[in-house]
Image 1 (spheres, one colour):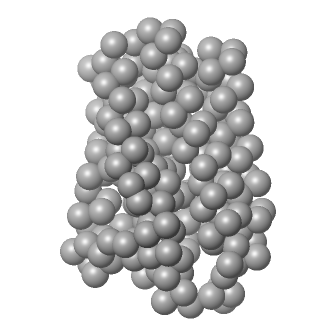
Image 2 (cartoon, one colour):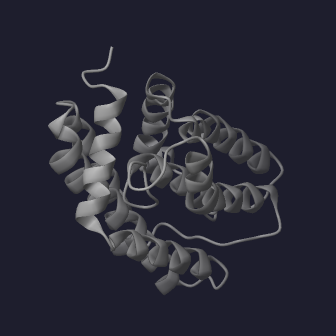
Length: 213
């Protein structure tokens, strides 16, 4: 059993979205910037993409989990700590050490990665709205955990070279947590989380065995 009801859960999103407007637009602008930089790979671009991911994960950990979600779920403090750690990993590995390099290629990894990103930013809110989760009582791109995690899976698939699993472990863990909660809270647009993790793993192993990226 969850320590809160579905109504309380969506009330948090309403309060969160109303309090943060127009940050939702900023999140979309950052998402578009990250997507655009994928098509012009450079060290500076890689660092900007990593900085965007780091900022989004840190924001979700500190603001969404610790300040808002903790009002109805004491575990939010733990969730927030892990989100902040994931953000710091992207900050250190991607921005400071320049160890995260991204690109788009004509391969399966890129196709699935872009599909995840489009789902997170475009299809996710459409599916939610069709199923009765209209703004502001709904998760929003970049500043709430589940669409951010799906977007991050897209970026993971667009990493050049071997993927270091420890750098992305928290994203995979949240896919399981958030995907399971989607059934309990009736958030069908989040069911994609339970698919995104296994699909990402399968695509990475498939393309690695074929020598892609």
